Image (cartoon, rainbow, N blue to C red; front, side, top):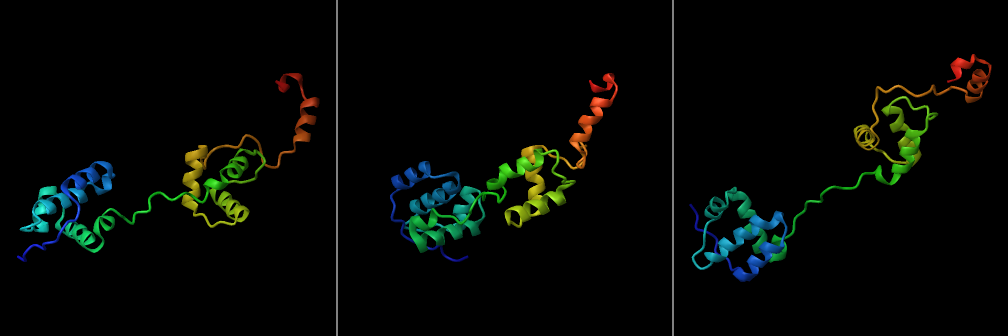
Length: 170
């Protein structure tokens, strides 16, 4: 087995402990590894021993060590995870809500809703994205009955109610 890489950690143990308490959970194990490397700075400690002490894979500890050697503490305390990106639908939430609540909208499924949404807002949202968004935020479902027919004429309905039997009106 190769000898451990010996490198100098510029930060003191007190500084490392302070960083450990103030940084987020993503960096906890990284800083604990640096504290172990700092404790064995003169003789050196292998990445496998540090990994075993932390219950980690030695490859990950080696990456962290190389990140520190290459970029210092700033390089160690950065990560490339972007996180949750905002949906393309969120800025158009109100128009989508209005379209779904309109009883005369004429949309008969998620496919037609998707087509309307993409042409209306000039986007290219995926079917599944829109489907999940509409179900989560508006409680929409594919197999729900409409309150009224799309092509129903409200004037004819009012005329029918005027000429029909009084018991039918209620």
